[in-house]
Amino acid sequence: MKKVLSLIFVLLLTVPLIASCSGGGNRPEGTENTSGTVGTAATESEGLETENYAMIDEYVDDLVSSVNFKGWTFTFIAKEDSWNRPLKEEETGVTESDAVYYRQRDIEELFGIDIDYVTTENGDITADQVKNEVMAGGTAYDLAQGSCGTTGQALLNAAVIRQVDNLKYIDLDREWWLPSLRDVYSIGNRLFFLTGSLVRHNYCDASCVLFNKKVTSMFGIDDASLYQCVRDGKWTLDKMFEVASVIPENVSGTGTWRYSEPLGFTYIMTSGMRITQFDEDGNPYVEKSLPIGVSNLADKLCPVLSDDTQTAAIKYTKNESVEDKYGVESLTDLFVDNRVLFKFGYTGNAIDLRQADVQFGILPVPKESDSQKDYCSYARMGWEASVYIPRSVQSVDFSDVITEAIAALSDKYVKPAYYDKLLKAQSVFDMESRDMIDIIFKTKVYDLVPLYSGGNFYTMGSFLQALEDGFNIDNSQLASSYASNAKVVNIYAKQLAKAVSKID
Image 1: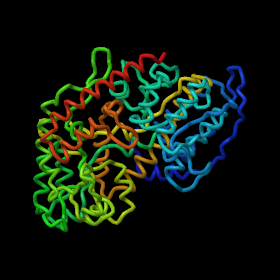
Image 2: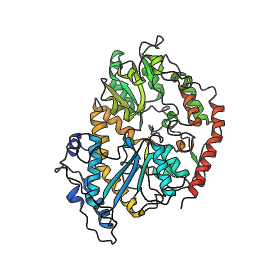
Image 3: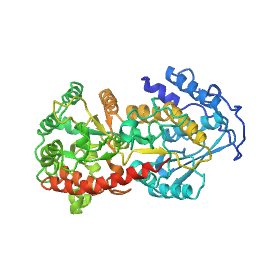
Image 4: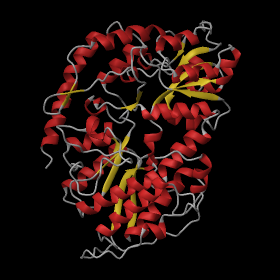
């Protein structure tokens, strides 16, 4: 999408309300289209519409003219906090809700349909409801949404979702879909997950480093030099260690920490490596023994991340509570209280922290060394919500075309709301951070491993936990722990590939 001044996006997201039309549950036959057009429902930017928005409108208009599902109801199932539905079927002044409302309103008016939402408590329940419906031969759900590591894993293993890279109306080359979908989400060279502009997690999941501006001022660290270091491609782990070394080690636990909330195995991906490999048939697996690059990286990071005089972290294996260890309710409180220089986290943290009384800047996670060509911003697939088309739906074309329309109009409404307004306009304190956000999102990378790591909605599984502990707590047993867990992970991966092979 072309860059547009933030004022444009603010105006775009406060456009006048047009009531969405309701449709019945009957499913008429025939192919003649009698619905509205984008020109009468979706162009409310008061002369500020960009060329890209015009392209989206024209594209959706073509979709509308290709089908006739007037009077149908499209049912979208997801957990309650997924933001796949507006708070109300009207403008509320809440950026996230209004963006989804505009998207819903346009689709309902253009296609002459209703969009209905079914919400659940979590992704596990979403998966169970979809599995039960499909196995009973029902067609209640047209689209499901949930975490790849939980909902997606369960639906794949049950073989109750459709292959999506061979559908008539889904165009994976369009900018509203994740560009690397085929490369990182495919199993057996087939794709079953869709993600992109239509889910908010895409704007909240990229790994990053936040730095506290009061702390940099206190210790004479030049903010501008940090940003320039990133631009010059010289923002590395060694450089970060060098910058942080001006802060004395916090032996008493009452002073300032250099780092907080280490990201664990995330550094494998941000260093340019990948955990998942693919065999000649396109099926995933992990190496049987710990890769030397991972071992060297753990040797470099663990002494820093496990040293609680440098890094504030909760060692979950020791069951240490935040309150007992640091006298605060959460590690984020340390950053808000200006007691941490670098906080490792995700871009969604920037949106949340903007509501707190703390000034910060945003940087990519450092490169492993100068020899690394590009920054890599890992997006944890366990957190990355995707959408799935159930195997039994009232019409494949209906699910297909409406899903594509939702994705396209998300590029017009949801992406500006999250990326341009919440993240790049409201969540930053300087223009340099906006540039950093662009760098972070241009270098997002993924890894399929949460799908077969043995975890669930609440845990990463023993394989990923071993990597996490090896980077954050103790790397002395990492090689043996990796090898023993890799055997189990590869069994899960084979089971997943076998389940996928049963999907027609």
